[in-house]
Structure formats: C-alpha cells, structure tokens
Amino acid sequence: MDTCPLIFEPILKPKIWGGRRLEVLLGKPLPPEVAIGESWEVADLEGDQSVVRDGPARGKTLGQLVTEWGSGLLGSAGLFEGRFPLLIKYLDAQEHLSVQVHPDEAMARRLGGNVRVKDEAWYVVAAEQDGCIYRGFRSGVTREGFVAAIEEGAVESTLNRIPVKPGQCYFLPSGTVHALGAGVLVAEVQTPSDITYRVYDWDRTDPATGIGRDLHVPEALECASFDPVDGAAEKRSHVADVWTTVTRLVRSDSFIIERVRMAEGMNQLLSLARLVIWMVLEGKGRIKFSGSGDPCEFGPGDSVVFPAGLGDCHVETEADCALLEVTLP
Image (tube, rainbow, N blue to C red; front, side):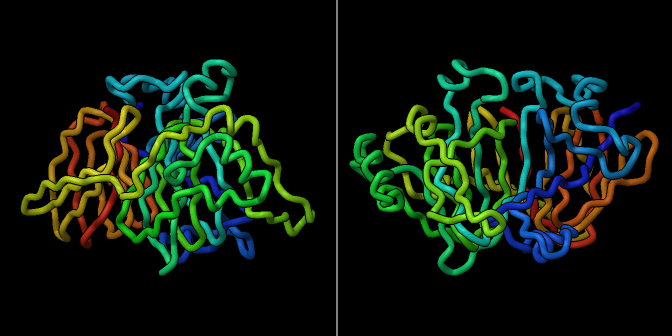
C-alpha cells in the first residue's frame, strides 16, 4: 500500500475529572452522560492502538503501519523504545487533575518494560477565567518540605500555580511535578508512555465506589525534580508569508511544536519529506495526494499524520485554519 495522510478514530477516556467540552469545542461525538477527560488522537501503546478512520489505510492500526511502512512513515525519525515516537491527545479538565509526576530516565532504565520517560507539553486550547496549571515547586521547596506537605495535606502550597489563557504553551519534562487545573482544555504532545505517579488527588473519592484513587508517593518522590521551574509560558518566535503564519512554541529533544495559521482559499504545495502531525484547532480543508483514495478532509479536532514518504501533496483551505504542527528534532 502506498503511504497516505492518516486520521485516526479517537480513543475516548472517561475520567473522574473529565467533562463534555471535547464535543462542544472540537466536535468530537461523546457517549451520553459520560465525563470524558481524554481523547487519544495518535497512539501506539501496549493497550491502546489508534485505528485509521478512513481512506486507503482504513482499519489499520498505527502499530501495523509502523511495521508495514517503516521509513515510509517515520523517515529518518527513530522509534521510541520500539514504538511510534509520539502520543497525541486532548485533555478536558472539568476538575483539577491529580498532582503527578512521570518517570525520569533513571527510573525508566531501572524498571524497564512499559515504564518509559514521559516528556510532554500542553497547549491551552480553552480556559475559564480562573483556569490554571501547576508546574514545578515554589522557590525553596525541598524534598523534606514536600514530604511534610504530603503528610499534612498541604501539597498545593508547595507548587507553582500559573494562571493560563488560550494560546499559551508549557513544556513539562519528565520529573516535573504538575497538575492541569479545572476549567482548562489542552492539546497534549508527549513521548509514548502512560505511566503516571499520583502524589495527591485533592482528597476526592470516586462517586461510583466512594473510594479515593491510588497514590504512588514513593515512586513520585524517587523521580521528582526539585530544580527551579520558570512560571512563564514557553518563549516563541514567528515567521510569516502571504498565506501562513508559523509560531515556534516548543523545541525539545523529544519533539517540536509550532502553531500554524493558514488563510482561507489557500492552495499550497507541501513537500514535507519527514513525519509531520497536524492537530487542527480551527477551520477546514482538504489534502490532495497522489495514489489511490479521495482527498483527505480535515476539520476541528482532527489530527492528521503526514507520513515521511507521502511525497508532494496540496493543501486547500475552505476557511481560516489554526493548527499545531508537531515534528521530531
């Protein structure tokens, strides 16, 4: 099969802290009366495989395409411990997420298996007036002080609380203690890992069971970083031409994120020659490509994977578009 643009069926994750805004703001059909916290857009994990929604590769899993297309999908990008190197999501926090941390490199090496480094970034799609995130510790907080705060139920007092607004982006390398605040919806780009160590869950209980969720305090303390963390959003740079504006949001060893705006009526030749992912936030259009299959239509909430071997294609926009473009260093 020739390579083609890919859009996958979302993998919806009910969460105790989730809401309904993925449907309201991004047009994702949600099951009725269920709080959905996450929509996994591009996933190649042990228990979660994205399945192509339509087009020539319809019904294929991402893991199958990694095997079948190889460098035709990835180009010069390597696998991440045998898996597609990115995990792409949306998160809708109706309530605060738990205060948590992800494995650092030392822990991932020691434990192995599905314990992998998890670097991630949040792009704020929507936020209520008092929306915030928690990222890293306040100045002067030590490991001993954090342990005492856990025992006293005062974890929030140790964290940097950062008010956020749409359009801001925050990088969260593994080892960073963090939490997504209530009223915030983000696009999340991360390395392919789903290991989270919860250290505090706001004293909440599951309405279905009346029991609090498990915490992982020893594991969290083992990999938490107490280095100072800047509270500001990531610095950005801009490039513009007649049809597009590109804003660099994050550059890390794991991924690069840029926000791209495209004007209505654009008909642009793309010669990418590398793996590229678009997370479409606004607008709609189509991608015309050689080979079998109709043009790939995209709209808000779609995540489009451009395989490295796709070759030249054309993008036509029917409305002004805003999207996140994710690539690998």
